[in-house]
Image 1 (cartoon, helix red, strand yellow):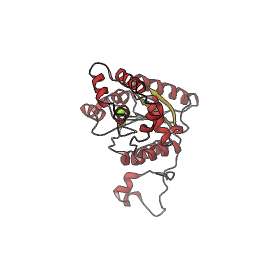
Image 2: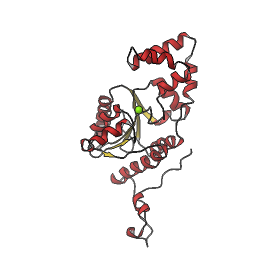
Image 3: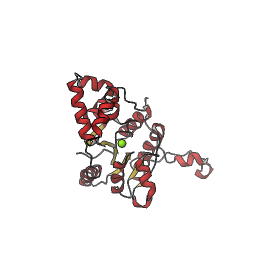
Length: 255
Ligand SMILES: [Mg+2]
């Protein structure tokens, strides 16, 4: 798999990270099968139960079209669409690492015009091993071109903690604040080598993620720092502006 053009791989979890809900629950609830799904969950693991309930729904005459239609109503914050498009426009290699159903993920991304932004979607419940594979293949592809690859990982759940531990000092983790991954990180922040940048909602992701990408590109000298006016000294700028520096102009984002 080719490394990103700009040397940065951004890996997203899907449920409650890209979308604001759990896609399995959304489909089951929207198709009126919540009670039956709960009944199955009392006797079997989640993935087995979702397979079983999808089989039951099919037997009741529900079609893939019905499933795709309810996936079009999944809430996806326009700010997150904008954040993804901005990172793609900056040349990042975007990937999804999720235990959600692949058909569900594709249907949501296609509905929002995001399908072409991602180079790979891995649906694997072992996030840690899957991330190791992404890091290994991306890094070796970059190394073959005499470059290094840097990683940004975004997630919300317990399953996103293990990948966060595997990233290095030059990488970044964006845990969703107030969600299980954030609580786990807070228990012992020193266990992570990667920089931690928590976010709470789509607006914060849209503000933070492209800025971090731009910062890495400036560190790697792939983008020039924002030029200051000739008669302007940094120490004279308001603190809020200094916090934002260096920040290159980003491409306009259409919500
Ligand atoms: Mg999740």
